[in-house]
Image (cartoon, rainbow, N blue to C red):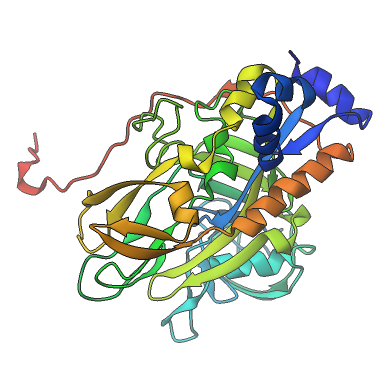
Length: 393
């Protein structure tokens, strides 16, 4: 029906028809898939949720005399310095430290990244390895995003295609990456925003690949690679959507251009810091099949209910529930009604899709052809301690 080049030409003339994925679903309900496919050029999706496998690459620029940084703290949060002399990586879940070395769990890398994006000054302290070409032993200063060279997010795992619903069948409260789970099935928490989520509308990643241009944190980003824990071989429903965690993406984007509205530090009680991040992905309507996939509804998508009270890699489940049930606020487990809350912000996920739609309609965001497909055959390998079973030759 269309090519990306043809759609980009329409974008340049501000003639492209762009709908959010919710608008597309509503239109399909009115006129059907075939007619809707004739009308729309681009469908925008979005999510705003914690994405803890995120972080920032920072290049400080050289001091005089030069320093080869081997330990570094940014606003009290350790940054990794094991490559170039003044190159750093600040992880979103890295825990802060006080001046006496004690952990400060409430202040983590996600907050520092968000502060830098917001233009706030942050303190930096570094210890160097003294060499002939890097004679400086220590360095202390205040930095902002305008006083450093490169500052970009490079996130190894974002936008899970699907995820789990967490519950607690035990006798004490649990503090998890989904937030607090109350004992005896006191509550349930889910993460993915469901039918508006980017990867659930392109279940086999036919439109999204390495090089796809996206909305990342309020700026322009790109899909850099498959994400860590990418598991496309997850079991799937007949509509090709997975029944649990499946595909993931590694993302990259210039943090200097990002908007603090879409990048926020957060903290999970007794678990640790993280980063709330807005990600939007445009889906070009190249053929009718694109609209058919995007017509999927919350009642057509499921997630497994997992009991976190069992401290094992593979935990028991209470079966599958639909996202329509989850968004209804209550699910039933073993005959008991359990209240449910989303970890993702459904409201801000919609706003991401709407903002990306505005960019495309205004002619400031163009679609890109991906340069390579995301692999569809990755298995998921666990790690086990073999101990004495290892033979040393």
